[in-house]
Amino acid sequence: MKRYTVYKHPSQGIEAIKTGFSWPALLFGIVWLIIKKLWMITALWIIIFISLIIIATFTHETGSVILNITILVGNIVLILLPGFKGNDWVIYNLKRRGYSYISSIEAESPEAAIEQVIKGA
Image (cartoon, rainbow, N blue to C red; front, top):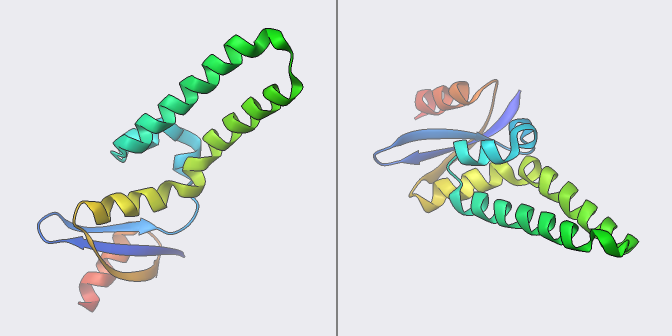
């Protein structure tokens, strides 16, 4: 069973978001961000990614080990961040759009979590 936080919007219904790590966000990165309509985070992710490419391109000739390690660490963090923070970003986006917290529930799927909330309400 997984833990889900459930949110409700007055006109757009109920959403259940898994708590913790998101494998789809890790595996699909930027595509996952776009599907979840996290536009500002997507834009920031792209800007950082392009910046790292530009820095790597222009500093490749210097041979600086510290700079190369910094760029490598930046890329690794950029790849891993959606997996660790993706669900939190989705929750923040729901709250910003007017969803309110209902409860936190253990369930097999988001649909099962929503069903439990509806039955309990």
